[in-house]
Image 1 (cartoon, rainbow, N blue to C red):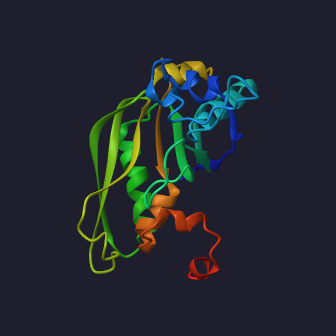
Image 2 (cartoon, rainbow, N blue to C red):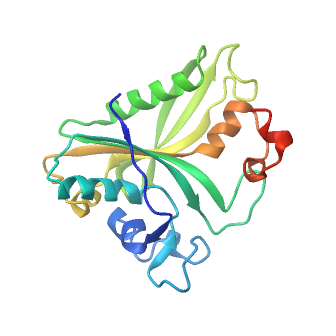
Length: 221
Protein backbone atom coordinates (compact mmCIF):
# COMPACT_ATOMS: atom_id res chain seq x y z
CA UNK A 1 0.00 0.00 0.00
CA UNK A 2 3.06 2.22 -0.18
CA UNK A 3 3.50 3.07 3.51
CA UNK A 4 6.88 3.53 5.17
CA UNK A 5 7.72 3.51 8.89
CA UNK A 6 8.76 6.44 11.07
CA UNK A 7 9.71 6.90 14.72
CA UNK A 8 10.05 9.84 17.08
CA UNK A 9 11.20 10.72 20.61
CA UNK A 10 9.36 9.49 23.70
CA UNK A 11 10.29 12.74 25.47
CA UNK A 12 8.48 15.30 23.35
CA UNK A 13 8.24 19.08 23.41
CA UNK A 14 4.82 20.65 23.91
CA UNK A 15 5.06 22.29 20.50
CA UNK A 16 4.99 18.97 18.64
CA UNK A 17 2.80 17.12 21.15
CA UNK A 18 0.12 19.82 21.37
CA UNK A 19 0.60 23.13 19.53
CA UNK A 20 1.43 21.82 16.05
CA UNK A 21 -1.47 19.36 16.32
CA UNK A 22 -3.98 22.16 16.81
CA UNK A 23 -4.54 21.33 20.51
CA UNK A 24 -5.40 24.63 22.25
CA UNK A 25 -3.95 25.73 25.58
CA UNK A 26 -7.25 25.11 27.39
CA UNK A 27 -7.71 21.55 26.07
CA UNK A 28 -8.10 18.97 28.88
CA UNK A 29 -5.30 16.83 27.40
CA UNK A 30 -2.87 19.52 28.55
CA UNK A 31 -4.00 19.16 32.15
CA UNK A 32 -1.63 17.61 34.67
CA UNK A 33 -4.24 14.94 35.42
CA UNK A 34 -3.86 13.54 31.90
CA UNK A 35 -0.25 14.20 30.91
CA UNK A 36 3.15 13.43 32.44
CA UNK A 37 4.99 16.76 32.45
CA UNK A 38 8.76 16.62 32.99
CA UNK A 39 9.70 18.57 36.11
CA UNK A 40 13.36 19.12 35.19
CA UNK A 41 12.63 19.93 31.53
CA UNK A 42 9.99 22.69 31.32
CA UNK A 43 8.04 22.52 28.08
CA UNK A 44 8.56 18.77 27.68
CA UNK A 45 6.19 15.85 28.27
CA UNK A 46 6.19 12.09 27.91
CA UNK A 47 4.37 11.95 24.61
CA UNK A 48 0.65 11.28 24.98
CA UNK A 49 0.22 9.92 21.44
CA UNK A 50 2.26 9.06 18.37
CA UNK A 51 0.76 11.96 16.40
CA UNK A 52 3.79 14.27 16.94
CA UNK A 53 5.70 11.97 14.61
CA UNK A 54 3.27 12.96 11.83
CA UNK A 55 4.44 16.54 12.12
CA UNK A 56 8.10 15.63 12.52
CA UNK A 57 7.97 13.39 9.45
CA UNK A 58 6.34 16.05 7.28
CA UNK A 59 8.79 18.68 8.56
CA UNK A 60 11.73 16.44 7.69
CA UNK A 61 10.42 15.86 4.17
CA UNK A 62 9.82 19.56 3.57
CA UNK A 63 13.36 20.36 4.78
CA UNK A 64 14.62 17.89 2.16
CA UNK A 65 12.42 19.68 -0.38
CA UNK A 66 10.32 16.53 -0.82
CA UNK A 67 6.68 17.41 -1.39
CA UNK A 68 3.77 14.97 -0.88
CA UNK A 69 2.56 12.30 -1.49
CA UNK A 70 3.50 10.88 1.92
CA UNK A 71 2.48 7.50 3.35
CA UNK A 72 3.76 6.69 6.83
CA UNK A 73 2.99 4.28 9.68
CA UNK A 74 4.12 5.19 13.20
CA UNK A 75 4.23 2.48 15.89
CA UNK A 76 5.39 3.49 19.36
CA UNK A 77 5.01 3.74 23.10
CA UNK A 78 2.88 6.51 24.64
CA UNK A 79 2.06 7.61 28.18
CA UNK A 80 -1.09 8.78 29.96
CA UNK A 81 -1.36 9.99 33.54
CA UNK A 82 -4.25 7.76 34.56
CA UNK A 83 -5.08 4.95 36.97
CA UNK A 84 -4.49 1.42 35.72
CA UNK A 85 -7.14 -1.28 35.51
CA UNK A 86 -7.98 -4.18 33.20
CA UNK A 87 -8.56 -1.84 30.23
CA UNK A 88 -6.26 1.13 31.03
CA UNK A 89 -2.50 1.47 31.42
CA UNK A 90 -0.28 4.50 32.02
CA UNK A 91 2.10 3.14 29.38
CA UNK A 92 0.92 1.44 26.21
CA UNK A 93 1.53 1.20 22.46
CA UNK A 94 -0.16 3.04 19.62
CA UNK A 95 -0.17 2.66 15.86
CA UNK A 96 -0.59 5.83 13.82
CA UNK A 97 -1.14 6.18 10.10
CA UNK A 98 -0.82 9.23 7.85
CA UNK A 99 -1.40 9.72 4.13
CA UNK A 100 -1.03 13.10 2.42
CA UNK A 101 -1.54 13.90 -1.25
CA UNK A 102 -3.51 15.99 -3.73
CA UNK A 103 -6.61 13.79 -3.92
CA UNK A 104 -6.91 12.09 -0.52
CA UNK A 105 -10.49 11.55 0.70
CA UNK A 106 -12.40 9.80 3.47
CA UNK A 107 -13.05 7.01 0.98
CA UNK A 108 -9.28 6.36 0.86
CA UNK A 109 -9.23 6.22 4.66
CA UNK A 110 -12.10 3.74 4.80
CA UNK A 111 -10.55 1.52 2.14
CA UNK A 112 -7.18 1.50 3.91
CA UNK A 113 -8.70 0.54 7.27
CA UNK A 114 -10.94 -2.11 5.73
CA UNK A 115 -7.87 -3.73 4.15
CA UNK A 116 -5.98 -3.56 7.46
CA UNK A 117 -8.69 -5.31 9.47
CA UNK A 118 -9.32 -7.93 6.78
CA UNK A 119 -5.64 -8.85 6.87
CA UNK A 120 -5.66 -9.01 10.67
CA UNK A 121 -8.75 -11.22 10.86
CA UNK A 122 -8.03 -13.44 7.88
CA UNK A 123 -10.87 -15.68 6.77
CA UNK A 124 -13.55 -13.56 8.44
CA UNK A 125 -15.88 -10.99 6.94
CA UNK A 126 -14.91 -7.62 8.43
CA UNK A 127 -17.17 -4.57 8.28
CA UNK A 128 -16.30 -1.04 9.40
CA UNK A 129 -18.38 2.07 9.97
CA UNK A 130 -17.64 5.72 10.69
CA UNK A 131 -19.35 7.81 13.37
CA UNK A 132 -18.85 11.60 13.55
CA UNK A 133 -16.52 12.68 16.34
CA UNK A 134 -14.15 15.49 17.30
CA UNK A 135 -10.37 15.55 17.56
CA UNK A 136 -8.45 18.85 17.33
CA UNK A 137 -6.02 17.55 14.70
CA UNK A 138 -8.57 16.28 12.16
CA UNK A 139 -11.60 17.83 10.45
CA UNK A 140 -13.89 16.06 9.94
CA UNK A 141 -13.15 13.55 12.68
CA UNK A 142 -14.63 10.08 13.03
CA UNK A 143 -14.72 7.15 15.42
CA UNK A 144 -14.12 3.89 13.58
CA UNK A 145 -16.08 0.79 14.61
CA UNK A 146 -15.38 -2.74 13.40
CA UNK A 147 -17.54 -5.85 13.26
CA UNK A 148 -16.20 -9.32 12.50
CA UNK A 149 -18.76 -11.71 11.02
CA UNK A 150 -18.37 -15.46 10.56
CA UNK A 151 -17.40 -18.63 12.38
CA UNK A 152 -13.68 -17.86 12.03
CA UNK A 153 -14.05 -14.67 14.07
CA UNK A 154 -12.95 -14.74 17.74
CA UNK A 155 -16.05 -15.59 19.78
CA UNK A 156 -15.87 -12.44 21.91
CA UNK A 157 -15.86 -10.28 18.78
CA UNK A 158 -18.33 -12.14 16.61
CA UNK A 159 -21.13 -9.95 15.20
CA UNK A 160 -20.45 -7.08 17.65
CA UNK A 161 -19.69 -3.48 16.70
CA UNK A 162 -16.54 -2.48 18.62
CA UNK A 163 -14.95 0.98 18.75
CA UNK A 164 -11.41 0.64 17.41
CA UNK A 165 -9.85 4.04 16.81
CA UNK A 166 -10.11 7.74 16.08
CA UNK A 167 -9.44 9.04 12.59
CA UNK A 168 -10.27 11.75 10.09
CA UNK A 169 -8.98 14.20 7.53
CA UNK A 170 -5.85 16.01 8.68
CA UNK A 171 -6.73 19.51 9.88
CA UNK A 172 -5.37 22.23 7.55
CA UNK A 173 -3.62 23.85 10.53
CA UNK A 174 -1.62 20.66 11.14
CA UNK A 175 -0.47 20.56 7.52
CA UNK A 176 0.40 24.26 7.64
CA UNK A 177 2.35 23.87 10.90
CA UNK A 178 4.43 21.13 9.28
CA UNK A 179 5.17 23.28 6.24
CA UNK A 180 2.74 21.55 3.85
CA UNK A 181 0.43 23.72 1.73
CA UNK A 182 -3.16 22.89 2.87
CA UNK A 183 -4.64 24.59 -0.20
CA UNK A 184 -2.92 22.02 -2.43
CA UNK A 185 -2.73 18.88 -0.30
CA UNK A 186 -5.13 16.93 1.91
CA UNK A 187 -4.56 13.90 4.07
CA UNK A 188 -6.06 11.34 6.40
CA UNK A 189 -4.79 10.12 9.75
CA UNK A 190 -5.78 7.35 12.14
CA UNK A 191 -4.55 6.14 15.51
CA UNK A 192 -5.30 3.02 17.52
CA UNK A 193 -4.07 1.30 20.66
CA UNK A 194 -2.01 -1.75 19.70
CA UNK A 195 -2.50 -3.30 23.14
CA UNK A 196 -6.27 -3.04 22.77
CA UNK A 197 -6.11 -4.46 19.27
CA UNK A 198 -4.08 -7.44 20.51
CA UNK A 199 -6.54 -7.96 23.38
CA UNK A 200 -9.41 -8.17 20.92
CA UNK A 201 -7.57 -10.34 18.40
CA UNK A 202 -6.37 -12.94 20.90
CA UNK A 203 -9.04 -12.72 23.60
CA UNK A 204 -6.85 -11.17 26.34
CA UNK A 205 -8.91 -9.91 29.27
CA UNK A 206 -6.42 -7.70 31.15
CA UNK A 207 -4.20 -5.09 29.46
CA UNK A 208 -1.78 -5.21 32.40
CA UNK A 209 -0.68 -8.67 31.27
CA UNK A 210 0.85 -7.06 28.18
CA UNK A 211 3.56 -5.44 30.32
CA UNK A 212 3.82 -8.02 33.09
CA UNK A 213 6.86 -9.97 31.79
CA UNK A 214 4.99 -13.07 33.02
CA UNK A 215 6.42 -15.99 31.02
CA UNK A 216 3.23 -18.00 31.51
CA UNK A 217 1.48 -15.30 29.49
CA UNK A 218 4.26 -14.53 27.01
CA UNK A 219 4.89 -18.17 26.07
CA UNK A 220 1.33 -18.46 24.75
CA UNK A 221 2.43 -16.34 21.79
